[in-house]
Image (spheres, rainbow, N blue to C red):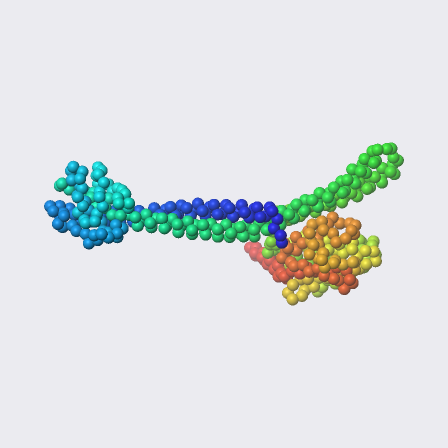
Length: 421
């Protein structure tokens, strides 16, 4: 099914929203991780600097003789912590060979970061008898680790956002498909309902305008009122069916455990009601209902009665004068099967998937509101039944519904009266 622009737009909004949320969370987590990692590295450097200052303080009488370097001429990043003695006049003396020149500044016991010899250093200082002892270590590797971490997080973050957007877009399309289908069907239903309601209203309006346009005798007014009454009845039928469908759509309910209906009994009652209609149209009604035992299903009796009535009404209308309609209710394979056959023109195969759509008509046969089978479909779905639309032995349509057979409710035992006296 081709996705329309509204569905794509909805999916894109869902994907953008999900991506924005994931992106915000990823940024927060990345910043927190960076802070933790950098703080841990800084603490490790500060610990080494503190140990280095303690070692230098123990040789304060002659630190040049006690503190030496084994990395002379090596890379500053691979060198151990350097140590300097800062005199009271601000001049500094390197206590480790290869140490870069220490800039002149006012020293405190708080760690600082300075750039020396083109490399960032982290420095710590403690007081000494002759001034200050300063220890420093290059933090270029820390900066490199931080930069590499940011690059990795940026690449992984971009991939994460791309995957999130793509996944959310697909999920949005799938999630919006039924919503869009409902919206489209609702729009079609509204348009069809407006058309169906407009027709009888237009006829009524035209009849009233025509009756008021000139004087008529009593018989003429009576004919007009009869046509208005007929259209009003059709209008009332459409509105009642629409209200029934609206209530069913708003409150789809599963049948309760105690709602058990004998389909055979309901089918027999409907046959009795429609015999007068069939006789008036010279239609032969055939009873193929199994009356040997109840055939119960979990459904309320009113809904099943409406279902059978809709099927019988359609069958009689399409069978036509002199036709035949057969109604059967049997038990087959643990399922209660209701069949209504007619001798009419039948339902083409390409229309069988559409007969339950609201206001759908396979032909221009007069009568009905176009909502009967839609109502019947709601009853079948809410009662757990399944449809089968085929061809009747007489060549017309066969409408078949089957349900799982339900156990008959057990009669409650009536307590015996307690003896008196």
